[in-house]
Image (tube, rainbow, N blue to C red; front, side):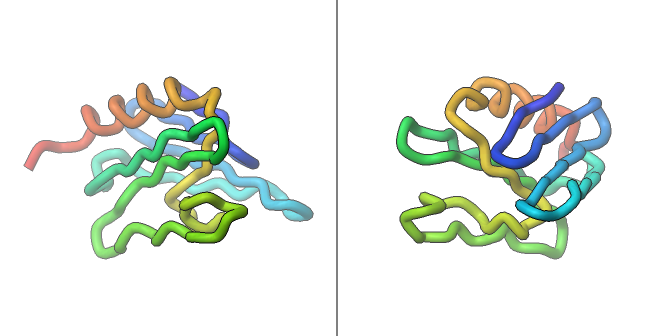
Length: 108
């Protein structure tokens, strides 16, 4: 299951979430998270005017704050390794991936 994001992608194989980010002028970086370690998820769908984002919350870390500038339209900073901005065309795929991650998380 894959979601094409803005300058990156998120994939989920049923156990591991892999976030790949490519910043301008740098090599792609990959961050892997076990779904069982995720304590929460956040999904803000993209609109026609602004990109949305998907974010995974881990134990002992607070979710990255949304930037409030006009250029980023309420998304976490690009440097946050646990989130990825998504375009409007990826909204449906992002919803499906987040639902799959929620199902893979252990129940308390």
